[in-house]
Length: 389
Ligand SMILES: [Fe+2]
Image 1 (tube, helix red, strand yellow):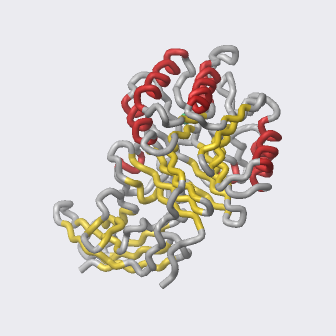
Image 2 (cartoon, helix red, strand yellow):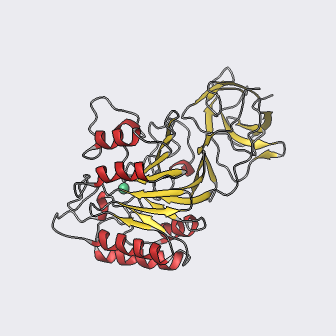
Image 3 (cartoon, helix red, strand yellow):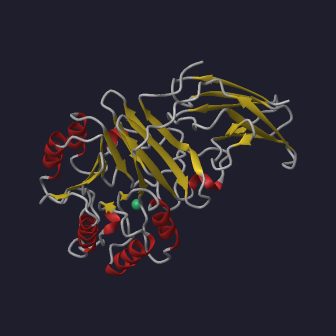
């Protein structure tokens, strides 16, 4: 007889201590479920080794949300011969959340495409992300910054995205060749993407510093280019950060979405700070500017760390309503720290859905291989939330 005890540790999220009792079993998988069984389009959120006494413990951290449709947790425990399994459904002791606010903006976020030759994975990521109201990319679109790679990328953008679907992108270090005096392909691509957005009727602001902003409904999308020729992580020209400060002050919006290739040191997905070098120059200045404003979604890539990592891929500054999101990668990702039991799906390429409405943000990572939503890549932020029962 399988049992599960959950001690919730924080309100409004799935964090807590999950203790499984499954005598005679080797491992238990935990998935969100309803009364009919596991939710089929969500990945498992834990695989728990069971000790000889029949007990296994999983501490869920990182502030992920419980899917709206979940009413139960499914526990599936497998015996030592790996062929026998027992499954049970445990009702959740959390109140169900209210439905999302209508009329928000839904954007697909992809990062670290590293397009070189085989375009399958990048094509799939673009096609999926393009089913929303726009595609955002945090850089490393190509692997070596060559004209051939940018030509292939443009071909994919034109064939995989609808004519009316905007795509907005900033530079990553891999969007430039190693030689400092070669390869301006990224800037040509950025101009083409911004021209395309203008033809789609969107308001585009281009600053001479290289930063830009595009309006999508209530949402203000901002691009910062913190990578430059020579494959360096640094702001290419002076002026992007003062422009950002002015722009945030002058531009009312439900959300300001800031695209920047590398994460800020204080919110990097490895959560290490002491003695660490920032990823790019002017890290502290950018952090201070952001903290002077409200309602910001800071989107980065670069690390290729899996959204399944125990510490999570989203950090929230509740007081200022700032969310720091690291998007994993369209390519294979790394789980840090490693966990003893993990499915391959946890380190395959992913994209993220961003659903943004005034005062509300919902972030859902999706596996590109299976199309399933990643339970450990799901976050909600906003005024309504689950409550303690
Ligand atoms: Fe990358």
